Length: 126
Image (cartoon, rainbow, N blue to C red; front, side, top):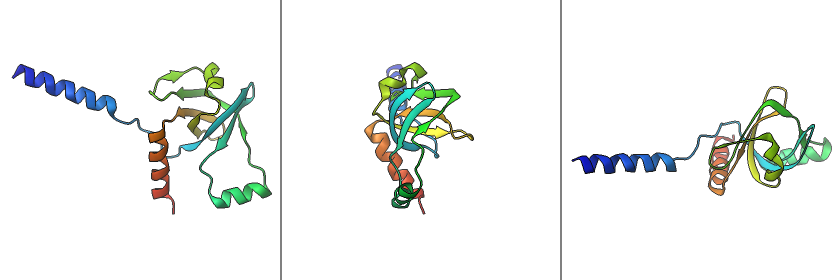
């Protein structure tokens, strides 16, 4: 009986490790660019056709300031330091913005997470 309980406990632990991390609903997909003292370049990857057309008329900002409380999470949900942003250049990420329009959270995404996020956003789009 003890072996059965131990096996069951290990199985439950293994399943919880494989569980996907929870990402916020307002996550914006895109790629990171160059970083400097004033902020970081971020190119949105989930723009609709209407947003792309409006970008031809009015230029969209591509350089965003970083929030003082910035948090960066890698693929394994570990914290990264803001000094490591240059190592993430060209990577697919999800970001959230604070009320002032500054980036306050950055998640480095894997291929499965990108596909799941795009599917989730397609389901919630009108």
